[in-house]
Amino acid sequence: MFQTPVHRTPTSGLISMLEVIYHTIVRHARSGHRNAVIAILLSMFQSLTMIFAFLLFFQVLGLRSSPIRGDMLLYIMSGIFVYLTHIKAVTAVMGAAGPTSSMMLHRPMNTIIAIVASALSALYMQIITLMAILLLYHIIFTPVTIHDPVAALGFLIAAWFSGCAVGMVFLALKPWFPRFTGIAKTIYVRVNMIASGKLFVVNTLPATMIAMFDWNPLFHIIDQMRGAVFLNYNPQFTSADYPIYVALGLIMIGLMGEFFARQHVSLSWFAGR
Image (cartoon, rainbow, N blue to C red; front, side, top):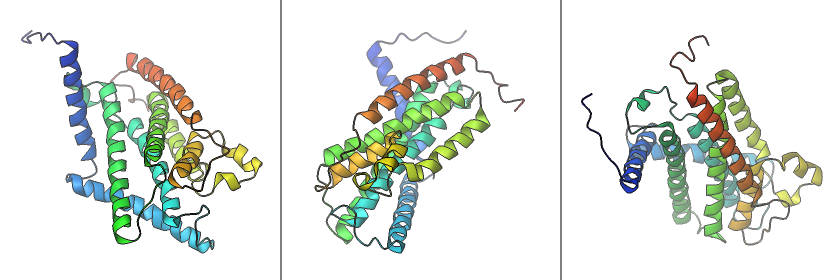
């Protein structure tokens, strides 16, 4: 009754929405810790832990040199960073604020802004972590040489985009099957520890093993990423287009499911569960 109507132009509406997205991204980036620098350091520690774990694993197997002609640690990082970017995007989008969240009580806020902000904050943290680790490795140990850095960054963004697409499907299913969705997401993360292909070189695999993992977009992205990182590797059995088509299809399914769930949302949705 006491509100004054505000007439917005499309440009001012877009600027207002971008401002809300920016503040929501900052809020998500600080969710790991109140200090943004410490939040980035924690993300770096998680990535370094996986890198050292896989380096030790390869040492135990006796693989002291990269299966691809080049730096062994760069070979490991090319798989781990793509995998982590994908999984962090899945987790961030799936955990975005829903229509019953208290954040939705603020007028400029809506579920699309929450989803976009969650996805962009995950990408921001991973790119900052990747740049920091590569810079330290370049300065302290050995110069880092990437054959095609623009293509490598493109495949990293493709891994993030496909993770957002999978997260959208989980987000659409979560209001209807909350426990099942949580279990399915955990299974997806665990399966991709192997099915993503970060442990092996696709060109050296037999046809039977390639057929087992060929369904996975992340499998294609990691192999294409290594083709962009290493001069002496040319992916022969994976496609750069397949993950994009799959991600676009999953995004459309997830958006339709999220819209349908939003139309039937209720504050007492989970009361009996």
